[in-house]
Image (cartoon, rainbow, N blue to C red; front, side, top):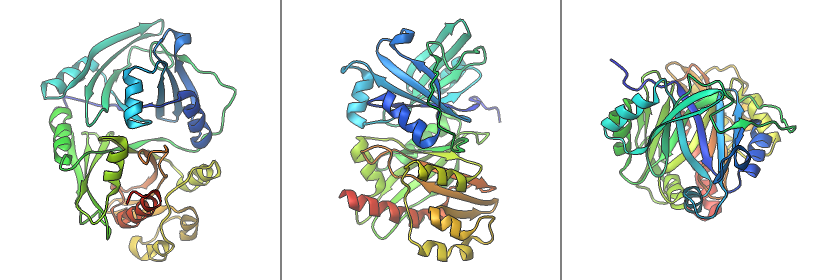
Length: 363
């Protein structure tokens, strides 16, 4: 079938944060990102400062408002630090905008051409769940550092990288009975298809449950799982997120690495806290997933989870929330053939999340 919205992958992810300079220092120190680009008063931007970080194929933009009354400030006041933009690389940002709006997407801004001495970039944007937006980025005629209006950010502080390589998938949390609506949005307006689904029998514990569907574009370069709450005895992690984020939004970003053992060791040494499952998980692991390359003892020491599907296996681990509000977190994932999302780990993982919720008084 003709793909009316060919995507080149995730171009960048932009967070709105209360203090971008300090947040940038955190992501450099803790996760090994490098300084890449900057826009602010020094580059002629009067209302915000944006610090751009890079590690391999991952680009994060951290943006903070310079005035107390602005759209950015209002977003932070309501949601806390969180993801505002999931930017998608395209060859034609005008066509991407026209095709998605024609199919029912709500416009965020019409195509804009930005230029400087290094060429031009065309961007356009549509709205998705909550206050999150997708920006289409066409940069084939641009040779600058990031985007027009940005300058290279040189820094003498250069922590070593941690082996993070690319964005594997980005998970969105939506409200009660909204999952199908937003899955249909990705199907109808962006041409995505459903890769896999999980119901409350797949994702449940004694106390809480949720539903999830994974939407993917035709090439599989862009994957967006969508979660909604399900009935349970107590408040689920999705309900907790929506309560503190004050609406739907990005729950977590899954980042791939070619060597999860080395990456997690490095991240832990830099102070990153991960969710831990009980030791009994590893006693049963070999029987459940069969032979793997890694030593079970090494996985148990670091708290890394393993799951298998028909194509191979994957290793994954989840950070605790990166903000004081229990909202956004990272997943670190290494795929060894597996194309799935760790269904066999759901129960142990969500019980670990429930323990954290209970400590916060939010279960």
